[in-house]
Image (tube, rainbow, N blue to C red; front, side, top):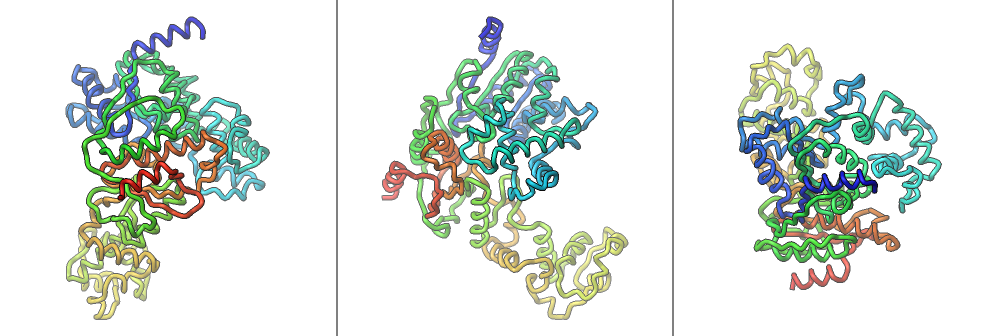
Length: 536
């Protein structure tokens, strides 16, 4: 390293604090309540502070907490509270191209590949194209694309197909489009970042080498830098993230949060068994809370006590496994959502069910409710009512009871319809499994409970990172072949990190759903012995 490089490292060290926070020890609390609010209380305006986190959810939480304490600020004052990509994006808004119209996401990437080269059209991938994923990893790690390809243990495409996909993709982009990785690269080369009082980086273990290059540039004009993370929770290695930039390469004074407030002794001890299998884990001794709790294993989904009070995370390793979990949950009549808030049923269908329930009891419904409900009535003889002109011509303030629907909308049902349940009337556009599921929901919860938010979240482990729930159920099945390559200890270690993140989401009770599938999270002798001891 040159003398100027050494001087820069020393300058960064003097103004940087690195917070190591194991699960539940309060990383986010420390960043917001002790550091961010301290600066705001001193009179520093939010526009002089940048808060960068890995997810929109974390950023919005920081803004909400700050405004609750300092109501004189408006959300517009927190213009630099963003994810790293959105933070860069704001600097391109006034350029010739508009990122809103020129960004390429995962779905468009796959479409480009399939539509532009017939030799590549048999790809079968639903999610991000494998080759473009590896190519993106090479850019994030600033390595040669071919070298990155050769390092991959599992290969979906041949080297020839991989190179053709890259060429096709880059040809499509040319000068008119950019993707998320391009935006980081361009920001490094083109953007002059403003002088700030404070830069906060959360979940720092998940940033890639390319993103760290951007961070190095940002800190030049910042008076104080605070970064927080946990190397044991770095689970985005597949995208090029490298926790060593946080732990080793980026200088700063180290602070370790020593006590978790999330879980007690049982979950803590089980998580430590997993953590012992993580390679290059830094020594960060921390302690459990005094909360009660337990870890139990089940062999069948029906055995899991889903009636236990509190919130639930039901987690799988990959999307295909999560889809299996959702099917099992629907068979059990469970009301759930994913981590983005999408509920387990179609809202329009649910509104139609509620509308029919209302009018069958002699109550009135609005024009909007009537229009939606008519889409699902199977016994209607005339469908002309469904035309846009028909509904537009009706007064917005008009409400309809059963007789009104007959007079105004031409609803022709026999007299027995008053007494028929919704599933005998609303069969149009309903499939039998959907009807069965709605009936089970109503039997289990009642209508009022379904109008609120569900207590159960079913999603991947990656999606709930940073969250917590009273109960966590982890399905051991993965369908992730390369994760269990005994020849690659690094991959085993990466999988243990994912498993570690999953089990440490639990506040009270951790439930493990076993399977006889050949691809399972490796429980190991230590795991099984611990569980046997706990259950005896």
